Length: 299
Length: 256
Ligand SMILES: Nc1ncnc2c1ncn2[C@@H]1O[C@H](COP(=O)(O)OP(=O)(O)OP(=O)(O)O)[C@@H](O)[C@H]1O
Ligand SMILES: [Mg+2]
Image 1 (cartoon, rainbow over the protein chains, first blue to last red):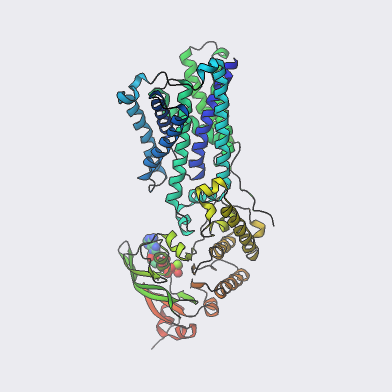
Image 2: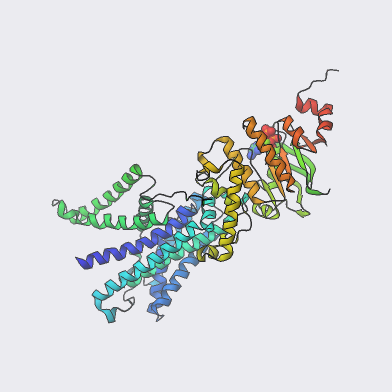
């Protein structure tokens, strides 16, 4: 049971990074990234392939982060001029392209068989139990560090410009702001964080395959950010843990409803996820910890 | 006094209708230049071309000796040319304070790394800017709503925020598109005072206005536009004495 809790908390930490990534770009700049799973996959594959080739894990993780950011810039460069919906569709396409590449470029990704034996740092020294605890601490430390950095950005002048662009990009231009540049930076950082989350996932699982990067993952993260509160890093952070709590909680549904086959339990979980999403949007459209206006300094 | 802004032969059409028909005029350094004319004369369209909201199909705009005809709006702001909008615009969910802060120019703290590391230059600039923003808010009597989102302000307050943004930007020139329209008389008198104060600080102003008493009080010279081009220009007294202006705009009939 304990190892199950540790596993769930580690997963929640990784989801938390993804939620922070989405919140930066969606809550901050108002750009919808439907391809989050794609950037997550880029990071996971980059770190896995590099470390399998003998690159030390910490360096592989940093490289994955950079690859994610580069993919973010690539996917945004041509489309940053496109507004809302169009950009969102391009990101959706990007994630599918990543998945197709992972499935078909066997020389690089081993196709649908996936990549086994990804190095798990310190696992041989710590043993499986010790590794699980160590990795949980690692993920949570990184999550908290990223959270603090993003909260700082959110409250700093950069965050103010970002939100202005979200509200009215043209008007931000009349305020002298370079909207393209700011959006590109935000997207690169956001995709870099998603890449980081992917790398952490790969080294934790030791095995990745294209199946791990389904669009459903992106939907879970949207659920996390929406329920936690769009536009506020603390909301995204909380939302990720709520979503994992919910996803894992419904796993025990089978015990409560004895008549169901395991396939039916799995299907009813997805129905419940959908219902929960609707319920949250209905009851608290702004999320648990919504964005708020920070008061002007007193004088 | 030399021309700060020069507009030459601006042409633009919408749906085949020519709205700017070779408009040419200049705004001299240090003046409050009025831009008046009938509804649909092309005044706002001219301001749009000058501020970069619209790329004119023909003609040239130069500001402080630089050809700015095709520059993006933010680069024009960088040169010191800012504008307000006829229909007040804002960032709906941002506070009045944030609006004022956003219009401060050249803020080093807005850079990504500066914001992340909280560098000194950025912090100090932010503090100075915040002081200015608070005093601008007090001047405009917006201090009691400073933390409210702009979407929750009254129409007149939104107009005041437009003025406040211009005050924050400390530009060389401001284009005001009917800053007093829809505002009560007391408030519009106050806005007029703000404009005078801005001008006394050395900021050149181009003002579109339909209230002739205001134009008489604030503007010299006055440019009259009709059908997409300049009709005449002169002091207020001169242009109102012009028969063509009286017929086209002021509603005075001359029966021969
Ligand atoms: N974006 C647009 N699309 C189509 N037509 C436009 C557009 N903007 C302006 N026009 C037309 O151009 C003409 C001039 O409009 P403009 O807003 O410049 O007038 P104005 O002189 O500012 O008038 P007012 O005093 O009523 O504000 C009008 O006939 C208007 O319908
Ligand atoms: Mg107009």
